[in-house]
Length: 289
Image (tube, rainbow, N blue to C red):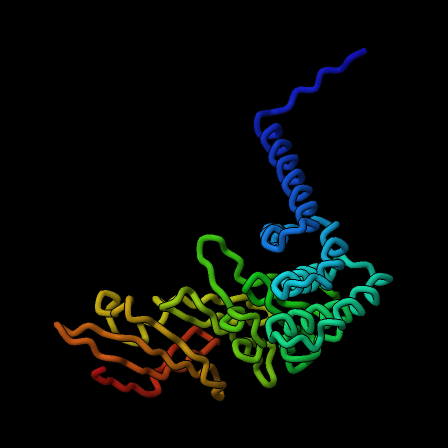
């Protein structure tokens, strides 16, 4: 006896989207073997956000590709999917990655070290930043801080928001995390230096038990004592982590203020107090450019 199955419109749409996504991944995987290097690169970039379990093995032969960008992207993809690679295959992947460990290109070398550190669970080198107590490890993934809890092997991509993007400053150029990740010397507290776009930067703060605080440029305006409409946003609004104070974080903020036809550069040192979310002005300097 035939049985009729009726699907809701939403279920049908979801099924169609899933089939389309799987078809797209299949196509991109086949293009990884294309003779044209540019085609291989585009396929790699298209697959960067996919979590298809076939990807790690598909990336393995690309570590021997003639193109530096392809080898770098393959190493990045393998590292980001460390949890998809079974323990009995780790040695094979690490051996393949190690062949590029001394690459002349720093970006490729950094991605190789990142992948090896993740696969080996050693998290050593400057592609990782570890908390003082050793429990928490940060590495960069998709331009964002990714937090690993070494007590259970779980990870969390911090700050992911398609509508409000942000990038670790070290993510540009696949740089070392020391440039943008700052752990407190004693507490489970970390400051991330973030780019919002070419003309704006900010800080994000993570605390165990409290989660992530994404500071926006507007959060600094009240302690700065400057109306938003007077800020010269096209000229840039930049923040910099200076260091730890006895009870908080010292931050330097640089911005321009429009005063009539004049533009004046302001450099202000602030202290942010995590407990109570308070602010204190430490110093202020105003200059004519």
